Amino acid sequence: MSQQALTLEEIQDFKGKYPKQLWLLFLTEMWERFCFYGMRGMLTVFMVSQLLLAEKVANLQYGAIQAFVYAFTFIGGLFADKVLGFRKSLFWGGLLMIAGSFIIAASPKDLFYIGTCFTIVGTGFFKPNISTMVGDLYRAGDSRRDAGFGLFYSGINIGALLGGFLCVWVGKQYSWSLAFSFAGIVMIIGLVTFLFTQRMMGPIGISPLLHLPAGKRKIREIAVFVGSLAVLPIVLLLVTNTEYTDYFMYIIGPLTLIYLVYEMFKYSVAERKKLVAALVFIIFSIFFWAFFEQSGGSLSLFALYNLHDTVVGMHIDPNVVNNTSNSVFVILFSPLIGLLWVWMSQKKIEPNTVVKFGLGFLFLAAAFYVFYATRFFADANGMTSLNVFTLAYLVITIGELCLSPIGLSIMTKLSPKPLWGVMMGMWFLASAYGQYVAGILGAGMATADENASLTTKLMAYTDGYRQLAIYALIAGVVLIIISPLVRKMMQEVK
Ligand code: GLN
Image (cartoon, rainbow, N blue to C red; front, side, top):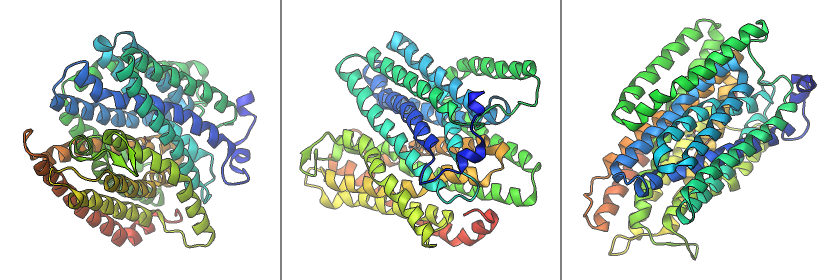
């Protein structure tokens, strides 16, 4: 079979900085993120302007949708490990996402929630598993792995930037139906790209059940496909009744932890220690995302009310800056930081992953301090500098790059192979909690009432950002202090 032509060794023995398969996974993920962030960027605007929801309800539903998207990655990862393999999971997820986009496109106002549920479950099957396949391109101990994830992360953000900008623009200017179809068409391109990628992936991502007779394997696979369709009405119920989101979040986290502990008993003490170290990263990342994801919530309201519209001499809508500057900075800096790690590793001065995470929090703290400092640039009307705000995005992005691509990479380093999908799913589940907590934090910061002056609003939000800066600083320091302990649990993994 042509898929089997390459062996894993041949793939992992690549010369140069990046394996060639990485570029194809990069493109596939780029199109998927285009579709995902395109949909994400349309959600609240569509809910408020077309479905005429109150802003508060729209925000809550947005938070619930985002939380469910990331929560389903755990389930997608689990079924990839146990039944489908990464490739089929990814393909199935992509098909569901395409279906979701076109369902909404068919009649946006009527089918919005149904289509969104397809996207939620689809992303769950797609997102963790493509990241895991990137990990498979590298041998254990290959110091080029972090740089590879860094490059992959640029692909994510090119897609996020294009989708986040274009879909909402097409929706607002031309037609929502066209905008949602656009997301679907782009996802088709993503899946076709993956079809070509597959040929070069050798044994990576194939079924974990090859030892079973084909018939038995098919039955299990079909059960997963049918099960994931059967779950759609439940997701619909949960998303449209946001009070259920609380219950869901209370249950899913503890349940996954119990499951992980059960799995841990199948492994040696040394492997268990690594899994505990992975959990430390996962738990800290919840805090990171909870702060970081203010960008979709409180920071976009801050951008709406309190910012001038001039950045480096150009007139740009502050909300556009809020939505795109993070991606722009990732695209600019991710390859550079990836190469910096490779260079430092050659010089034997590369900080270990725990310290990189700690640095991520220190940058996060600095960024929120800059968001806080916007108050010192405000005029008498409570309007402040978009330049300073954008600078904060630059700093927060450096923090993200010290943590997020490395988090993907470390999940594949610290987990035994049969748990890769689950652990990647847990990594993204932390994002689900982050999104969830972000909403709560943002709501807590919105202390000024609707009719308060802009200066009062500015003070309320920036007070909140100063608090977040302090918490982020504490988290960073704690991480750096406990780094020797975590390092010990990680053993030979750097
Ligand atoms: N921006 C990254 C992505 O879309 C990370 C998202 C996350 O883990 N919260 O993949």
